[in-house]
Length: 411
Image (cartoon, helix red, strand yellow):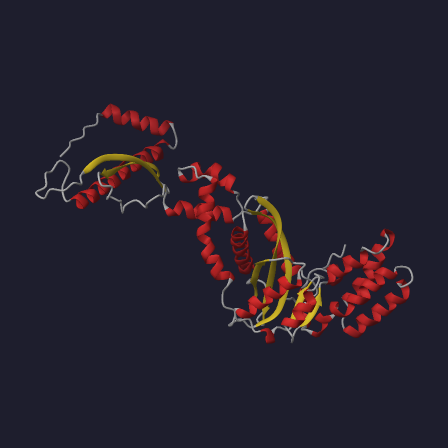
């Protein structure tokens, strides 16, 4: 037994130092933990190699064997909350020893990698995580290490992205695309990602489709819709598709969802109309168009439109034609429950999601490939779904605290 003697002056000196420097006690405790844990792990590894070789250090073995101890190699390993350990790993001459105590090829425990991934998903860039990793985890992580840890999420996101939809009772589909600067090998390209948001009959919103593709291409949308149906989406139950004026999208949607109708985003249509109106007339025209789109019934909307046409047809014929061509698609929502009108008029629901996509990827400037994009967008989508669970799709107009005619900003 080792007897340790400490003199009273030494104890007093340590106590004074701890009192005079706040936090010194915690430092002493951490240093002691690092030393004790390092010694404990080293002893475990010595026991491992003893079991492998069948003899203690310097012990002769009856059976002659070519293998024997061959010194040690230094290896650093960081444990969350403890810090960096300088370990002494035993070696054998035949290189048969592989420690079960330490994970092979890793320099830190899994908790550190998981927490770095959480920081990344919450909005921090790999550069910023690298800068603070030493203070947070006791070891500086490289940008490549952070990215490698994030790859562990890919499999889970792919399962979510391709999940079965046969149990979903989907009534509405919102469709839009969002574009990112994405790296492919040595090139940086603008790559659109098609997004489909569903609303079921209970009012629950979910992201059911994320797929890279040309948002201006009808065939890209066709592939997206067919993928949704191959995953079990019952196309016969879908009653309405809400979209902006992407070329070819309406035609493909009707072909793939024959029982559904189309609602054009009123905000997009009004912007297109106002783009053809002289600046001095924009406010007056916008007010008159708003009265059409916020009418209490379709007959009333048609009445307002006829008044608008008789007043403006000669002065702004191009704008008038644009409105007339899109009017029927803009009023489809009137055939659905009134409490949902405010949510069905526009694509605001899915554009809010796309805005969150853009906000999160702004710090990255360039998204590192398609898998990285799916990983980020998947996590953001799941986060948004938690928010949507707290608010029912559509609201009764009487519950709004602001006038109905001011709820949409057309220009």
